Length: 120
Length: 120
DNA sequence: CGGTATCCAAGCTGATACTG
DNA sequence: CAGTATCAGCTTGGATACCG
Image (cartoon, rainbow over all chains, first blue to last red; front, side, top):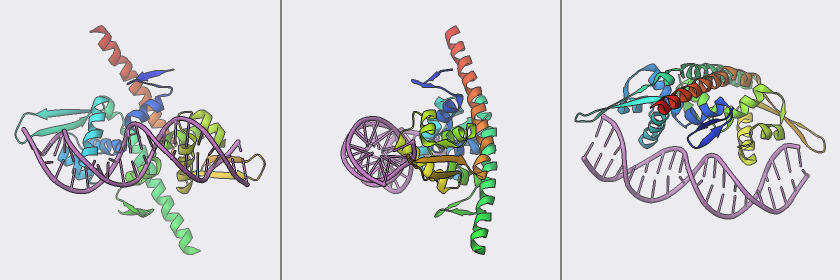
């Protein structure tokens, strides 16, 4: 089952998915927009202080190209731009949730591990 | 809730999770090992022909350091090394599954989209 | 078989400065 | 506020050679 998309061919839907959401900060951006929507660029920056502006804008553009988010520009001064998840973007909620859940498990695992070591 | 790990500090378990499974090929590797386990290096290479050997080995090492996978070396000639998911690694199954599921949705979305365009 | 070492090109990332 | 430009540095990739 070959899936052509953007000059590439994917052989599984997992590979297709990863090509779209696998970017360095994309899951983090989607996580933000799942919590609150719409968000302005400056608001996303507050939620994700570790992402520099250039990368953030690039990743937002890519997500927009892939129809995961929508970008609405209001013709006002000073500029106002709002980002929110598209219909297909909203379906990423289980992905983000499962990652958060696993992160919780992993954190517990790390705590147990450090306990073991401190007992030794 | 600060989570120190490997000289860094994470503020959410999502960030911690992404630091561990966010690598370029890690989800793909985990996907392989969920389907079949244990796997030898050469078998993983067959499943993931797009990953070059050097990167594959690097990502495997990182996953091993993070206790996501285990690496067992058999002292035989020729060498035999087997990789498999650890207990915490196995818990990543919902993450991989949700990504695959979303990929299916996205593929359908793309197909509908191309239909619309061909009608126009 | 399962690696490591080296070289080199290309792309991604980040910090900073600047603009309409 | 939202975004672009520039430059430096790191990561990734591909090919190839070599080792225990």
